Length: 173
Image (cartoon, rainbow, N blue to C red; front, top):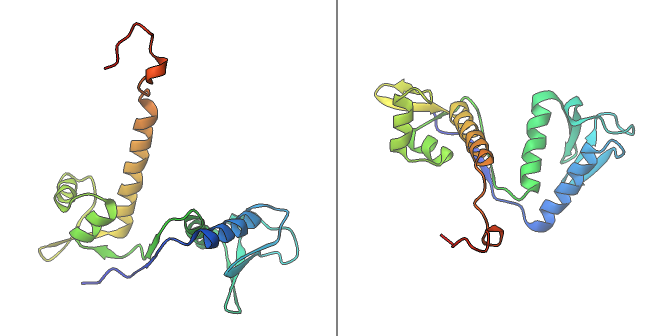
């Protein structure tokens, strides 16, 4: 049974997050070619103006330069942006299999509710003998789908009337 191979990182301090945010802005703005936040990030064009992030860029870490583009570049930029926004981050492989408890904790629901979702076909489950396992990719896809559904639902609901917006003759509930 494979264990979840992950790396968790605490949220950055305010100063470090701000420095990283500035470096990320320089990547996204075509007028600058480089930024720095512990690891130097530069466009793949060297001294030329920065290319859009999806066109690729290079990271220099400990003197080693690594060129990134496509999905890998987008994933690294997403990771760095989350750190700059002050979030803690967990990085794991998508082919990792999670136990019921691990998947439920990741999604933020009880293990019992997760098993109900699996039994109803809402989230895919695999069996290893008599044990249920959930793919990390399926758990994160369900989490993203439920977040989008919650955001859409809250956007459709009208906000309750604030006390100052009531007519003077109306009584407060």
